[in-house]
Amino acid sequence: MNKTTLADIAAVWRRIDPLAVVAALGVLCVGAAVLNWYALRDAGSTNRGLWFGLAMSALVWLAWWQALRSRRPARHLDAREAIKAISVRQSESRLFSVIQSVREAIITVDEQQRILIFNPTAEGIFQCSAVEAIGEPLSHFIPERFREAHRGHIERFGLTGVSERQMGRGRPLWGLRANGEEFPMEASISQVNDASGKFYTVILRDITERQRIAAALQTSRNELEKLSERLQNVREEEKLRIARELHDDLGQRLTALKMDAAMLTGALDAGNGALRRDAQAFEESIDAMIVAVRRMAADLRPPMLDDLGIGPAIEWYIKDFSKRYGIAVDFAGAETLPPLPPPVATAMFRIVQEALNNVAKHASATIATIELSCDDVCRLRISDNGRGLPPTRPKPDALGLISMRERARLLGGSLEVRSPSEGGTVITTLIPLHAAPPAPAGT
Image (cartoon, rainbow, N blue to C red; front, top):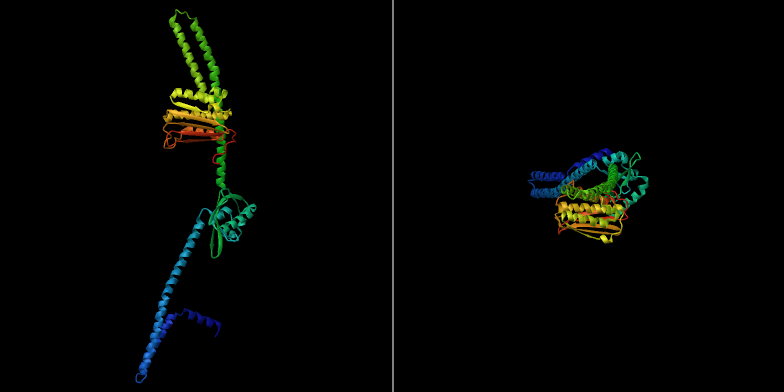
């Protein structure tokens, strides 16, 4: 008998159900007992043979029944294992579909950092097909100057036991495309252990476009800051020029006109009372015009801000403010103020001016307090006993707060507006006297 015949017999034997063999033996035993009884029914040993055959048949059927009972749990267990295996395959299929469809690049490597999974997004980012990438070292997609540090990073991460970590800690990482182009990216890494060993999965995204947009926005913001600063300076220069023209040119002309009116009044005959009264009324009108011109000049740019400093300028302004609006203003710190740089003095005065205007227009306050102190930093605090800030955000056209914040920020400082629980509004401004150029917004 050759090997092929033996293999065929073994294959047929493996397909035979042992329970079926036991059942067949039981049937044969019963049949043999019955035949034996018919054949030997006249002999004395008939009953003994019959009972012996029946006993053997019972034993065979009992063995068959016991084997059947023991086989049922095994069948159920095999069914459960089959269902579990199908469920695992379905889960793996779904997971693979998710990995293939996500918008982030997903790369899985083994402990030797050889690529096992390389999804379509990774193919697009690195410009390399999965067929070419799988099995290759991960270092092929990292610039050479970062490869050693990256390998050490993954090895240290594997020793920590932490399941997930952000890579780079806020600063961009760099990847290498198949064509040799470097690009910035953000990535997070996770690790998992199974029977096959330890695996690392990196989820990353290309941030080249985002960095380009951020750089363009930052450039635009810097240009707007320079433009805003220039506009502020031009505005102050224009106010100073107009104030000087009002005070020097128009004021002098009105003063000369007043002198002429006074001479005319003195030259008129005392007997001509009506004409003399008209001349006096004309002189009084000129006086009122001189006062108005001086007030406009001072509102534009108080001369004492340049001549005497920030303290006297604020004192003059709050005196005029209280007279106009009937709001008492207490100013503390004017006696201890050192000379301030002109940009800082101008910004402080304009913030006080804008804040008190807001108090008069919106706060319904009766008392306001100004505290100003300067050492290395100028600290300005303006508070009132009014109704405080509204519960909603200020209107988009409320440029007062915006202009105050911008003045402080352009000098490297800050401005905070809040409403305490006891009521009112508090504006706190900090401006360093030796400030560096203002940092770009958002840093």
